[in-house]
Image: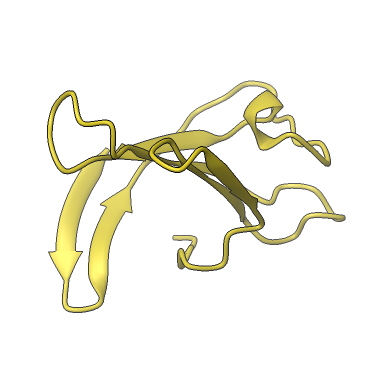
Length: 87
């Protein structure tokens, strides 16, 4: 995993190897996915989790993202505020 910064935001690259690919309708946590946790500091209660599923099946041709905001207790399915680019 590599992280960087560009003028339009945080950038990360992750290369994942898996012998068996799995992606179903929902929840994304049960699929092959990447979890990204962001907080302003260690031990902070202002934690946000992004669950990113790669879009590997014909019915899901694009990556899907769920967002969990632990401070507010809200989960947003189909979060659109994250740009996913495949390499």
